[in-house]
Image (cartoon, rainbow, N blue to C red; front, side, top):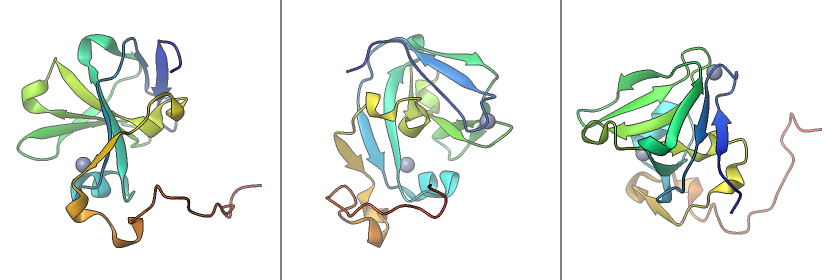
Length: 137
Ligand SMILES: [Zn+2]
Ligand SMILES: [Zn+2]
């Protein structure tokens, strides 16, 4: 486990955050709202106490995504960074693990909403062959 603080941010760099304490859990979420909000088939979230989490550059824009929850994203580039139940405001929030500067600093231990898991994601964490993407050199 790397030391604290851990830092992360959005794609364009306008929003940066710092995490000063241990996370409480980390999970792959396959729900349709995460899929739509990010354009990705799965989003990996880790949970932090809001006392241990600070936005240190820029500001998130918040949008209520259901009657229960809101999502915070970079207003410039749209990167989805934070998910929070309205009832947990000020207490805890989920942070998108891939926005960490070092995503390996956290490790998912379970997955949720598998009922809407995309068919071709079955076994995605098994040993899939690695191929270079078109934009890799
Ligand atoms: Zn951005
Ligand atoms: Zn979700």
